Image (cartoon, rainbow, N blue to C red; front, side):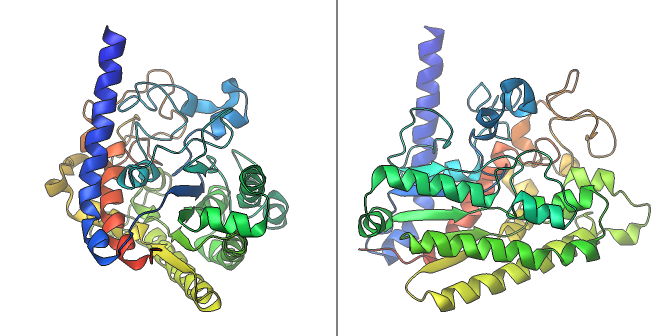
Length: 376
């Protein structure tokens, strides 16, 4: 009986969230005769992975994402999502009245309405390109190129010709990331300076551009390319790069230099997107502004229900000013979880809570949907 009740409550919550989010895109529906898409194809990293990483490696090596408290809030079990519950891609699917995306590596899955190819720790550059830059991927070798190969293998299973594939994809939404930040994160972790990492960024964006062109060649018409979060606001960097100089912090008490890097990253990415739109005038490539969506969370935190006193602290973590210790991560023994994850923005110091992803998804839906041209 308890199992059935839990299942019913989960179903009811999904239904209510779906209908609530649909209200947010009604202005788009009024503007476009057919403001819908019937499938989503997600590429990316831990911001979007719904379970590929924990299936890519033996469970024992899949680190914390295969265990509680990950997934505790919504699913009451781990799903491979690097959060306590749903991710932004989940809310996007619900807003489009689509099922939550299954990870590509989940056997016997239903991929009727799209596929999630994202993998925790994934990079835009492949391992050989990273090696030339003296950067070592820490979690997975499933770079953007590998995810593209998975996509092409999937396509070969659902269509037999380029024309047929294009027809199957004409009402699909492609999420090209977030991808590319791990290339930079790994470089920072290995001790490279901001100036050194900035030199890597153009090569990262070329990989993203090449991948975007490839999905366009297969029939993609609507593509969203997310930018960088303000990295200087994350407990991981606030802890590992903590400064005693108050001038190192901005009005949100985030690290200025890292946030300036994030803005540099985003400006170059938007230039790449502009070039893609010029090269493919019949395709819409839209920038997803993760930076300003996140800044909105910080600025309007009290109105959104977040605890202002813990706005930069991880919910699942321990120690220090930001409740984060890289040697004792979320999921490790004796590492506590805050009582109210719905009032926190950061889940584990590197990823966001379900509530933060929900609020960001609302912001992004309002921002992105009017810019996408839908097919009647």
